[in-house]
Length: 169
Image (tube, rainbow, N blue to C red):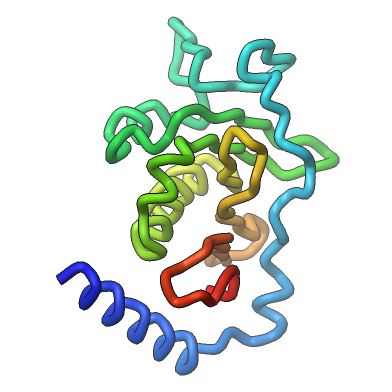
């Protein structure tokens, strides 16, 4: 049943991509994910206005608020995050660190669903996301152009899939 759902989902995704090819101008207006390296040392030693899953502000809700998604994350997939606020040099972003063992058990559609849900939440706070494992390997991203109305966003999943297509999906 799961294989049938995967095949059906892949077929529908392929068909929808062929039918709704984005315009070149639209593709270019969505920024690429930041190329800044993942700074895991900030998990234990945050600096300035950096927020992690380990920081709880007793006086107010921290932004972005990802604690709820961490608690409801299926099988504890979401392990930690580092949120970088907007600066003149970069857009606001959250580097999400996932449990690699659980991530590797997910199929493409489950990974997409996770990134999309997390990206929707981060987008509401004005943040893009990048997804990593603790080996600092980039697994996925959700980026938006916050200057456009309506927002233009893009999800990229760097995954090995069952069909041997590598990162092409």
